[in-house]
Amino acid sequence: MIQRQSEAIVLRAWPFQEADLLVSLFTREQGRIKGVARHALRSRRRFGGALEPMTHVRATYAERPRQELVRLDAFEILSSPLSRPIDYARTAALQLVAEVLEEALPEQAPEDAVFRLALAVLEEIQVGSTSVPVTYFALWMNRLMGWMPELGHCVVCGLDLRGGAVWYSATSDGVTCSDDRRNSGIALSAESAAIAGRIFRGTVRELAKEQWPSQALANLQRFALDTLERHLERKLASARVLTRTGKNTL
Image 1 (tube, rainbow, N blue to C red):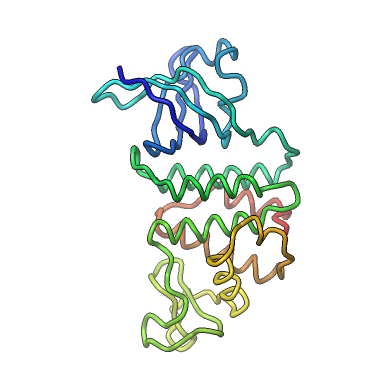
Image 2 (image 1 turned 180 degrees about the vertical axis):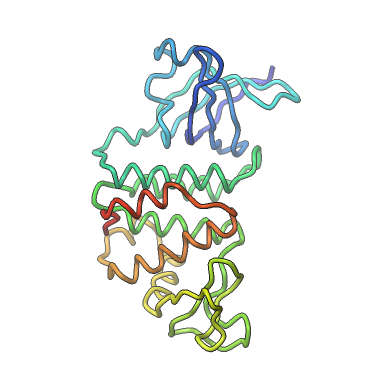
């Protein structure tokens, strides 16, 4: 057995065998892994509230060569989402981050930039303030995974689109001018495209302090989530929940 210790973010946990939990973790050193928390359903002494989704922990675990599941021995909570006020919208936003990380990242592939992104965004997802961190996270995930289209030029005719609106499709690559838009094309406003530029130049902490036009930010968030869903080839259940809350506010 190889003993390891790593910073990690708990993505999800579900019952496994009798009193155990199967836990999906995004670790800093090894990327996404799965492990068994023995007797976690029977006694909370070893893990306490550390198995709540989106808890930042220092995980101690053991792995055996050629075995898919690691043995989870202990978690030290570094930061818990339950330490701050929580409501339905904040819960949905946290679930979105967890779902995207679970679906986008291959197992055992370290992604330090994604890990740092997740920690920064988790710090800013607060009651009454979810839109900026969610949009920031979705856009940056698209960029870090290589899915973010270039917004400055039409992918069909090459027209310079900087400073104007662009059109995108949830089923096609790139953005276009209005003349070349697809039948299912959706407009991304010039204001929304400008906010995207700000997001890629700033930190989520500083951007979350600013007041943003709600319609433009919602337009950009839809674009970012549509792009994620297209490349993940599935709908994000948490995105639908977040939309239904009606509280995805600035």
